[in-house]
Image 1 (spheres, protein in one colour):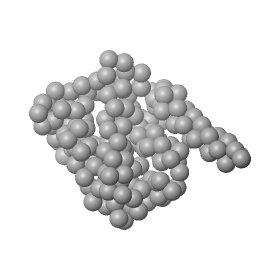
Image 2 (cartoon, protein in one colour):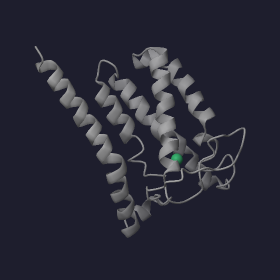
Image 3 (cartoon, protein in one colour):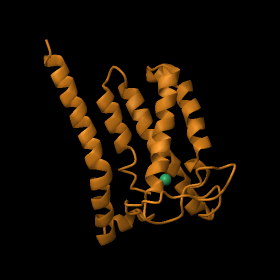
Length: 178
Ligand SMILES: [Zn+2]
């Protein structure tokens, strides 16, 4: 996985780029949570669940079906999130899908069980530029941790920052038009 800090970044950037009127602060927090939620499966490591099991890390919680279920859950929370059901559900689905896509771009570990429950096969994209994060958080503070942060800065944080800056610039120029 990319680190827990980087998973919500693209969705936070998208939410900020879309603006407060389209994405309320509550909805922004919710989509950040949905972007991290699949990695709650890491608890399995402490419970002795094998990595390769559908219950293990990058198993069922990294599937399109799980993303759809999160979308339904997000749609159910829509009134509280101050959004339409379609909008809240769509963004919740997109947040989980972004997590799955980022994991499939990483350089190590097992792939994502994106087709669960129809298949337990694990998949990666053919191009895997993001350095995989160590599962032990203590190992983030090492040379390997620095390499992970560097690759995430270039491939996740910078494009996200660019999205926010471009959206701000477009809004600024839009306002200045007579
Ligand atoms: Zn993950």
